Amino acid sequence: MIFPDAAARWTGALVVLDWSVTLIEGQPKMRTNSGGRVLRVDDTYLYLQPFSLAPQQPRIEVGRPITRLALAIDEELIPLVDIETIYPAPIEDIEILE
Image 1: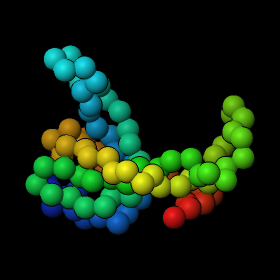
Image 2: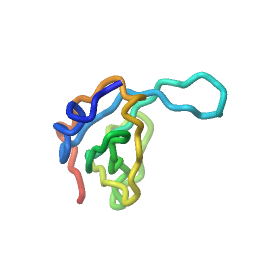
Image 3: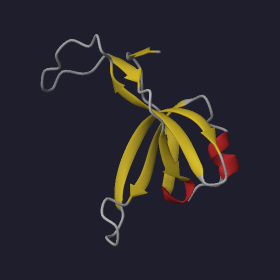
């Protein structure tokens, strides 16, 4: 779990989150990752604008690194209670299309 003030310091930053998600109600949570820009934080959620593939991205070949990312339009709400770690997104040599 991460507290709101610790999450809020990432507002505006491009990050990766390690967190746990419930895929099927009643089943144990599974570890997952999300990445994107932190839009805001309240007492319950971190609001993330997730990364997506850039529309102008050439067809991706298996094993070829991605060099362009975009940010999705829809927000992802991530419960603070499920977040384990927030860290800067490793985006060296990646162009982010706004």
